Amino acid sequence: MKQPYPMPAKKMMKHLFLPFAMMAAFILAACSVSVAPRAAGIWSTQVSATAGVALVRTEGGKEVLRIACRRNPADVWIGTTLLPDGPGALRLQIGQTVLELVPESGEQGLSATGAPSAAFSQALGSGQPIYLHRANGPGVAVEPPARAAAEAFAAGCEHAAA
Image (tube, rainbow, N blue to C red; front, top):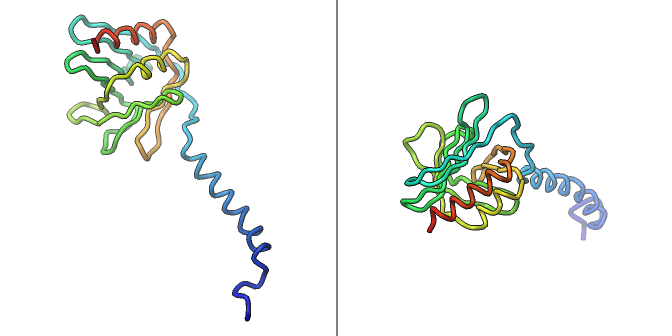
């Protein structure tokens, strides 16, 4: 019986392995979240006796990211101009901690809400970059807030959820 390929199967597998391995490496690299964080921004904490607490990032005097723990209803609200508005879930990731967010409409830029968690509040104080991205799309990383601001925000989030 004649072989369907001009070379033995073992040799053929050796020749096919490298292209498939390279393709797999490119796909995995595209899925990773190791994006260099944006620099030259300023973080501030805003506290409201009735609304909750927010971490606000400004760049060049313009607000580009607001992460808020709201009281009524108790949720995490994100507002940003760093990503375009559009359909699909938004994810806020800090290290291995991922907060799934549901987009809202009617705001300038992109806004979304999610459920508060202690892991999210603790991750903010870890000093790792904050990465915003769509479930299946590109994203943007920003440098983390100062530890004192992150701790004040985490305490405010715990108070807002109570």
